[in-house]
Each structure stands twice: as C-alpha cells, then as structure tokens.
Image (cartoon, rainbow, N blue to C red; front, side, top):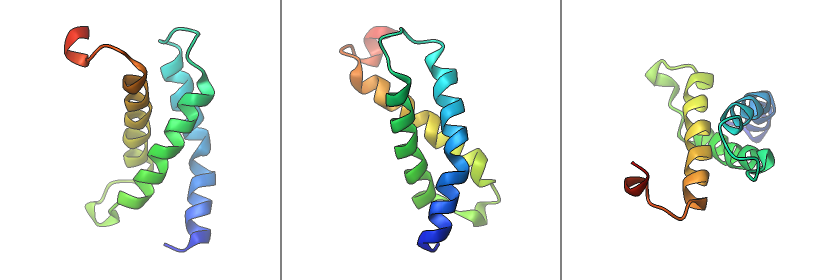
Length: 88
C-alpha cells in the first residue's frame, strides 16, 4: 500500500472512528474525554491498516470497526485502577 493510499484510507475512516467513540462515550462518565477515545481509535485504525489481510474476504470497514473499538476499550482499561477480574 502506497503512502497516498494509506492516507486516503485514514481520511475515509475518520468519521467511523468518531462515530464509534461517541457511541462508547454515551456509556461512560463525563470525566472521560471523547477526544481521548478518538485518539485511541486512530491508533486502532493504524493497527488495522497494518494487519489487514484482504485475501480473507472481509471488508476493511468491518475489520477496522473491531480494531478501533478494541483499541478504545483497551485505552479505557489502562485508565482503570481495578483489574477486569475484580470488576466482574
């Protein structure tokens, strides 16, 4: 993938990141900034671009959604002082 194609893919997917971040933010306390969630989503998008395998016959958007949401949730887990097992 050329740098121009990569940049176009990032630009095209930014609205999806914002949508996912706002959807996640509705279930969070107001102390969590949506901008932080968007930043984590961008990291997830970059990871999705690097690891996407088109030969698996999965649309990039579908794959990216999972990776973006996962990156946002991972960033939230890093902010939490309690481990996941304690939250259960």
